[in-house]
Amino acid sequence: MTLADLDSEACYRALQTRDARFDGRFFTAVRTTGIFCRPVCPARTPKQENCIFLPTAAAAHQMGFRPCLRCRPETAPGVAAWRGSANTVARALHLIAEGALDQNGVDDLAARLGVGDRHLRRLFDKYVGASPISVAQAHRLLFAKQLITDTRLPMTEIALAAGYASVRRFNDAFREAYDRSPSELRRSSAGADAGDKLMLKLPYSAPYDWDAILGFLSLRAIPGVEQVKDGAYRRTFALGEARGVFEIRPARGEKALALTVQTSDISALAAIVARVRRLFDLDADIAAIDGHLSQDPLLARWIEERPGVRVPGAWDGFELAVRAILGQQVTVIGARTLAGRLTDTVGEPLAATAGADESLTHLFPTAEQVAAIDPIGIGLTRTRAATLRGIAQAMADDPRLLRAYETLEETVAKLEALPGVGAWTAHYIAMRALREPDAFPASDLGLLRALETAEGRPSPKDLLQRAEAWRPWRAYAAMRLWLQGDQTPAPRRKPQNQS
Image 1 (spheres, rainbow, N blue to C red):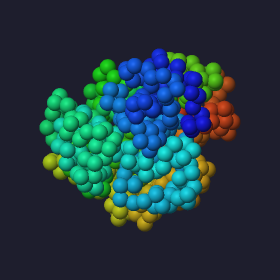
Image 2 (cartoon, one colour):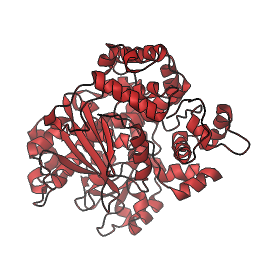
Image 3 (cartoon, one colour):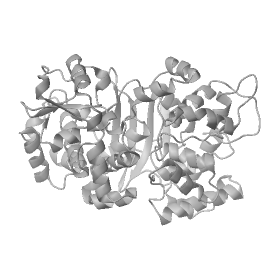
């Protein structure tokens, strides 16, 4: 959504009624108070002539407006940054959330995205209403504000976790934005004490089908690395020098997921949260997606029964690529077993001080570790072992190999150029690791099985033709088909590619 897309009359009606459907879609800056708010703010509604409606919090921050202390813009769902954005902007926003501008400049960010820095700035002006630097500044500020309000972390650790170069800059930023110091903003009843763990709430735009995404991840959970138990997802992680474990589950009574993190490096916290949000697809405009897919009568029935189905992402691109290769021509359970053997063979054991227990014992192996072994020993055929070593060596040589390009077609072509990677594998990697919302592995058995009728099972070509109506969100349609396929057993036959 761009600034030009915002209808001031519609925005003001949403503001008057505090319509939760618009939360995260726009922010209201009030000229007379110098404050910007969410549409659901409980404060008295300002006069329309005093309101400026903006697509993102960063746009309000760049214009010099202060975040509201009542509605807390830092807790708004991230739909505004996702909805309608050009692919390049969406990817840039994710990289900024992971700290891409904490140490490097806009030119480096643009190079990572394959565009010029001037072009990137123009895209940000159009879709975000703020420069990349202003977005990074607003992200640091709002993330730090959430940590101040919701945790008991010391201020020095909050400054480090939010990406501030020094405590002085941290204090100056808060005095400028809130007209008070960070310590003055902290309430005496700040977040619950969790010992050496940290608890945060990650908001989303409802509806959210937690059972669907948890069931999908449960079937594919890598032994020693991931675990689904008691309605929660847990996993080990490595991010830079940080090592640890996180757990995520629904926050009771709120449109949010509750994240508990145990990490050896607090400076990685913002990047950890950004990756978790991508893994659980928290920033999708699910109302727009389900509305579009509902034009297909079959999908409409499934959406009515189970609204809010998301596309699970991936913690790490290489890990997902390995999972996709191991899933070629075997069942989901078979691929999970192979991934567990690989992890047990070369994965780094997680130190007990970092949160290891009887079930979460290892980090998933790196590209360098996999490239250095012969994977035949875990039960792979010679061909697939060569494919696995090939992609591992390619990733070791170029750690940015699995960064997304400008279009889905370019991304798929780049992946298919790797030995042993076909269309199914490329689309599956693009769908989950690279967050391509229109990726669609049309040859997948689960997708074909879900549309099987008394006349027989459709061909991949037939499925692709029907899927044209689902663009640009075919990945979400695929999740619907997989979910339906899991509930409809198919006749036993030779295994094919499965997700």
